[in-house]
Image (tube, rainbow, N blue to C red; front, side, top):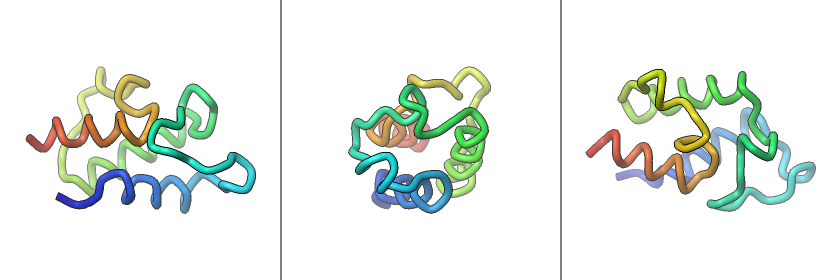
Length: 82
């Protein structure tokens, strides 16, 4: 399986974040609750994940429990692909 965290981090950095302003993004850095990613960015992230990893989110799955850090995103994607 591809390196999910690296692909997602690359997308986030290219699309939403300037690390010189936010500081480095680690695997457990809160993305949503810290404001690094806002609600519009979260929807773009969902679209990226669905397209890249070929699965569909259910409406109840689009929340902080699944999208708040690179660790949580990787765990969620692996679960969807299993």
